[in-house]
View 1: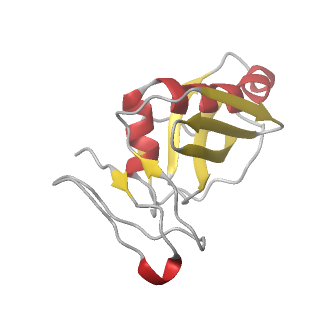
View 2: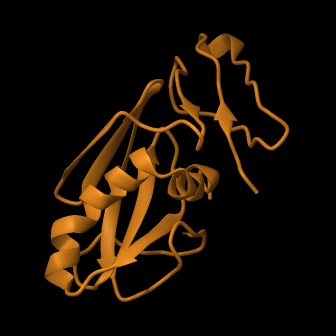
View 3: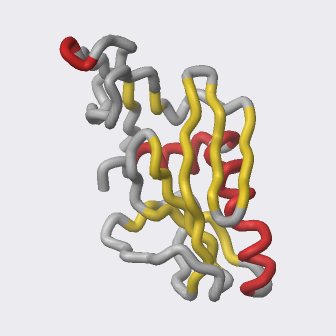
Length: 145
């Protein structure tokens, strides 16, 4: 099921949320809310540094972390109950959004070595959140998990 999030830009005292029929609504930690988490809207850029990533969209920026561990998964599928710690010891790349809301860990891919994963995972997390709607759907759709 596709989840989209639409929240209007207004003061905290008058929060109003607009959602389509398949949407999940959430609150965001802020006095002003200015973000729309819609998997159908592609990003315009991404960055990464030391296990952290950001993806920029026309409506704002989302950010998160990555980890490389020994647990595999399916591309773009969230693991809501996973208790992964950020690390670089495995070959399986997982991504998690932290802002504007926390998502579940979402599987990205496997690398040929732990060092290859450590060098590339965060970059590809940001890139896939920015570029691929199915991956964005896994990340945005698991927000709050």
